Image (tube, rainbow, N blue to C red; front, side, top):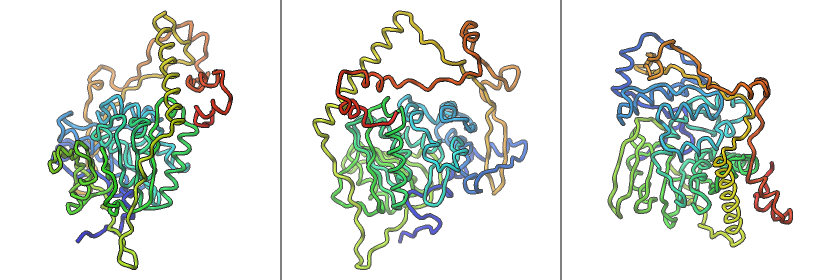
Amino acid sequence: MFTANPAADSAAERGPQERPAATPAARLAAGAARRVLTVSSESPEVAQEGSTLQRAHQGAQQGRRSMGGAVSAGEDNDELIDNLKEAQYIRTERVEQAFRAVDRADYYLEEFKDNAYKDLAWKHGHIHLSAPCIYSEVMEALDLQPGLSFLNLGSGTGYLSSMVGLILGPFGVNHGVELHSEVTEYARRKLDLFIKTSDSFDKFEFCEPSFVTGNCLEISPDCTQYDRVYCGAGVQKEHEDYMKNLLKVGGILVMPLEEKLTKITRTGPSAWETKKILAVSFAPLIQPCHSESGQSRLVHLPLLAVRSLQDLARIAIRGTIKKVIHQEAADKRGNGLKATPRCKRRRVRRRRMETIVFLDKEVFASRISNPSDDSPGGDWEEEPPENDDDERALPPEVKPEPPVNFLREKVLSLPLPDPLKYYLLYYREK
């Protein structure tokens, strides 16, 4: 009989136990260790989800790198994504754009935002975010395409669902199930903040997530099937068929199954292809609690709504305006016109890569060279050449201006009544 882990309170709570398992690659790295590294973090459990160990496992299992390298903490969201790309966690442009468009720090509580750009999981009460490298592997494995339907089991803060929504576009389906009602409300608040304030919203056509509260093991049997499904908690073997039945033929399911992050593709009504992606350890799914009558509390997923003609018109108008903006930008480039730089270009920093290995309750570290380490001079910084006139015209201490939201400017310049303009902008704040 399936038993729940008392340390985990929901399908969305993966944090403390979500860590890579030891592999031969980790033992090789430990054998090459030169010194003991002291790791500091919010808790020993969070430290165990060190991204560098996951990198070593992935390199051994997938053969993309002979040994894994560390994913350094970033100073901001873009730098974190740069590090994930360099370590080959993010491998496609579509996934990269989604990660850059949604700032991870926006899903943290204010007092914990200093840790938002570390490649570590974060957990506070029932609120939880997996490490960026885990989300990267999940997004890549899902092979998301515009117009698909997606189900997120253990949707948590909604961070992953928001990134997925940017790829699915306006004609996709984006549903999430979360066990704790307070986490569902937290996710809805974060979603509302993203829609109202993020300029990324106007750069994409968004498939807005819909969240429901309930146990993901109690989804109503008459629910629709999905093109893509992700479960963010450990799935026991006895629940594997339940998860598979949520998929359409041709669909992809990604979930932690028997200590492996696993990708399952439904190739036919009763045919499946399974691929092990990464050795991990997630807190398990919570066994449903039956009501006093002995009946389970069925979770009813949102109905598939048909967009109104008015909404379809808004999507079409915004798409047409974006095409005009892109064409105008292309014409300027064709005429040799360049936008005036607002600030000095940021320095390109090349860091050495560190590999951290957890073995037999001890922590070892060894330095693994990356191609840039072979260059003379060791650690160094490189600054791209700049135009001297630009540097004299704009002092280095001048802060860069915020990026221009061309779609918003174009809509506001149209000869339309103000209510219609704001409708086209989804009533968003500037």
